[in-house]
Image (cartoon, one colour):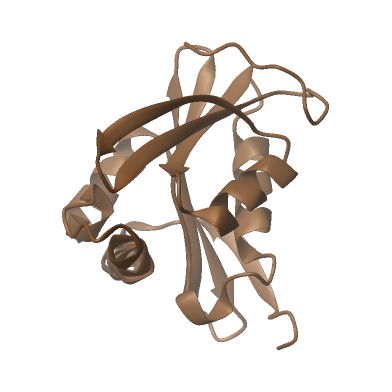
Length: 167
C-alpha cells in the first residue's frame, strides 16, 4: 500500500464524535491483544474528547477527502507533555501517520522539557514507533496477569538512547 496523502491540524469540536469512534476502533485491537475490554480508550465519547480539547491539544490527521484518519492528544503536566491516545485508522497503520502526529504534537509544545507516553507491554508496533522517535523506557507497571504498562519518555533534543529520569 502506498503512503496516503494527509494533513495534520488542530481538532475542532465538530471532530469529537469521529475522534471518539476512531479511538474505540483502534483500541479494540489492543483490547483483543490483552483480552481486556475495560481499557479506558474503549469508553471514549465525544464528551471525553471535548474534555481533552479543553485540557490541552488534540490533533487530527485527515486524508485528502477530509476524513479523520488519526489523532493524538497532548497535555502539559509540570515541565512535561503527556502524550495520549495516539491512534491511526487500523487499515492505515504503519504508513507514517502516527509518526507524523507524534512529531506535530511535539512541535505544539515548545516549552515542554520532556514528553511522556505509555502503552501495553505486548504493543510491539507502538513500542517500536516510540523508541524510533527517541523515547526510552522508564518503568513498567503491572496491571493484571495479561497487561503491564510500559512508560516511556523523551527529553527535548535528547539523542536516541539517552537515559530519561522517571518521575
